[in-house]
Amino acid sequence: MAATLIDGKKISAQIKEEVKEEVLLLQQKGVTPCLAVIQVGNDPASSVYVRNKRKACEYTGIRFADYLLAEDTDQQTLLTKIQELNEDASVHGILVQLPLPEGIDEKAVTRAIRPSKDVDGFHPVTAGALFLREKGFVSCTPAGILQLLKRSGIEIAGKECVVLGRSNIVGKPMAALLLQENGTVTVTHSRTKNLRQVTGRADILVVAVGRPRFVDDTYIKEGAVVIDVGIHRNEDNKLCGDVDFEKVAPKCSAITPVPGGVGPMTVAMLLKNCVEAAKVESNL
Ligand code: NAP
Image (cartoon, rainbow, N blue to C red; front, side, top):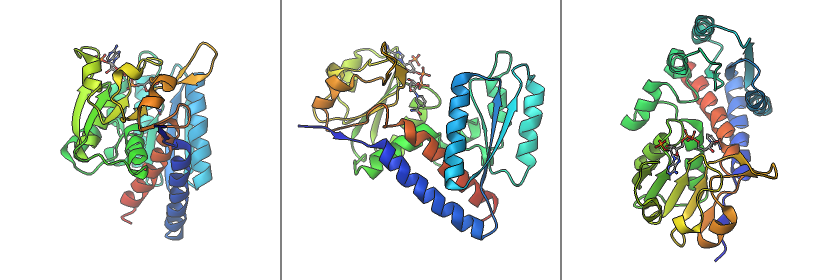
């Protein structure tokens, strides 16, 4: 059985078109959604991510306000900037590009963003709201994965869902979302015993382990749906995921490729969150 390829490029493009339409409608009501992005220092990978966000915002009509602060910016200056943006009614979403330079406390910075503008979904109040099923933004990568599953017609209710990885930005919110969708959810990590036995039960396996091609066919149940969150460069400088695609694809029913799977969804969901923030802040 050939696995269906879950096309994140196509689905994210659909979402961008939907966002574009929503932005137009908001503009007709006098509101232009605005995302403010703060980058501290010139980390090359961060600069690429910020550039991609800018491009996506520009494409959909979201105003992009970027603040590039010097590498030696102190924490208080950064917190003051965030506070300023919290108070600025023309700014709807605020994102601080991570990682931050040494000496700046990421937790303090994350907590400084007003939850109603926390489009990354990293504030403890936002993260808690997800677990309590209250209103709030969902971290973009897991939110994107949920869209991939839903828009590919993959049923979650009643399914054995296994999440490999328990990070605050992927694994934990992913587990909460799958639970919300009535999946039977197991979260695994580096201390999990008999990992293959656990992942081998999964109807839906989400892999966010952060190790190149860690998951091969021995971790997979025949016919499973496999979502690969990882992004790495292999020996030939080509992108690869946490899943060994060549070994796993023949065994599963559907799989995300790397690149072109989960990756493009993260920015698409950020745009969606920004539009949502603009609607809420403008009472629309
Ligand atoms: P992370 O913070 O490094 O978390 C990795 C998780 O995997 C941890 O919970 C860790 O367990 C677990 N783990 C590590 N080695 C293991 C092993 N041998 N057996 C079982 N579990 C193990 O990673 P992350 O931030 O969630 O990111 C995961 C991957 O997704 C990375 O490749 C990252 O680059 C990628 N990513 C992609 C996107 C996107 O937009 N596509 C977004 C975010 C991240 P412990 O908790 O016990 O240490």
